[in-house]
Every structure is written in C-alpha cells, then in structure tokens.
Image (cartoon, rainbow, N blue to C red):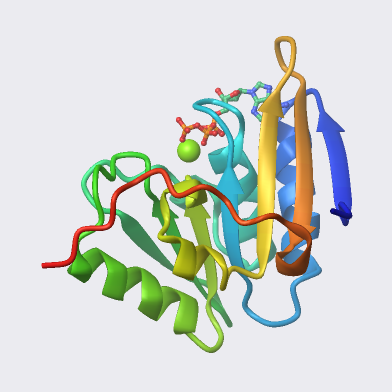
Length: 160
Ligand SMILES: Nc1ncnc2c1ncn2[C@@H]1O[C@H](COP(=O)(O)OP(=O)(O)OP(=O)(O)O)[C@@H](O)[C@H]1O
Ligand SMILES: [Mg+2]
C-alpha cells in the first residue's frame, strides 16, 4: 500500500494547513473519508479543507443533530458528514450517503468514514487517517482509493 502523502503536525494550525493544501490539490470534487480517534484532528483538518474552497473555517463544526452539514462556497459546494453518532445505517441514511458520493461536483467529507457501508467506502476517492502521538503531535496519512485496503465496516447496515 503506497502512501501518497504523509505529514506530522504539532499544532491545530499546521493540521489546517495540511487540509488546505490537500483540498487545493483536488481538481474535481473529491469524496474524502477521514478516520481517527476522538480529538485526533479530523474537524481541524476539515476547517483547512473548506478554507481552500472559500468557506470560513468556523463554519465547519461537528453538527450535533444532523449527520450532514452543507456548506456553500463561492464556486463549489461542500458536504461535511460526521458519522460518530451513527449506531446503525437505515436505508434513508444509505441513500443520503449515496447521493453525496454520486454528486458530480461537490467536495464531500465523511468523518468516521469507517462507519460507512463497505460498498460506499469503496467509492471514496481518498482516505485520510489521523493518529495522535504525544500531546499535540498528529500523524496524518492521505491515501488514494486504489491505495487503501478495504476498511472494516463498524456499523450494522439495517435495511427497512
Ligand atoms: N497537531 C494538532 N492537530 C490538530 N488538532 C490538535 C493538534 N494539537 C492539538 N490539537 C487539538 O486537538 C483537538 C482536535 O479536535 P478535532 O475536533 O479536530 O478532532 P476530531 O478528530 O474531529 O474529533 P472528533 O472525533 O471528536 O470529531 C483540538 O482541541 C485541537 O486544538
Ligand atoms: Mg470531528
């Protein structure tokens, strides 16, 4: 498995910069999965990504009551999903996630992408993993779809 990008950061600002640079490299709306434990820097990275699309970083938050947040930039749309609270995936959720992945031009970002059904994980364009080291140190790996192993699905799929 080849890693396309690798970064070690020691501040939230540095993690934002990595996110911003990564987003700038995305020519077509990417479908991005972020994976890492609580507090490992996923949302901080998203703030940098959205800034690259002209959206104020403060708008990228982890929504408490909605799974997906829609952010409109001057020229591009961004969908930011946070699957942390997802206990099981009902067919409505599945369709929502599928639409986000099928969207022809939006940048779609899934925090906790390991909770997506495998059929949708396979269609992500990139996976970014976050590891927290001591204190403020974070290790960030960015891999393209063809370069990551299939993730293990962590949430049961319930079809209603
Ligand atoms: N190098 C760093 N990169 C990113 N965040 C850092 C770093 N060092 C310290 N932090 C702190 O770690 C926390 C990261 O929070 P953030 O919300 O980005 O994580 P998260 O992975 O989205 O968590 P959650 O799973 O709860 O959504 C923030 O409080 C931030 O200030
Ligand atoms: Mg978060």
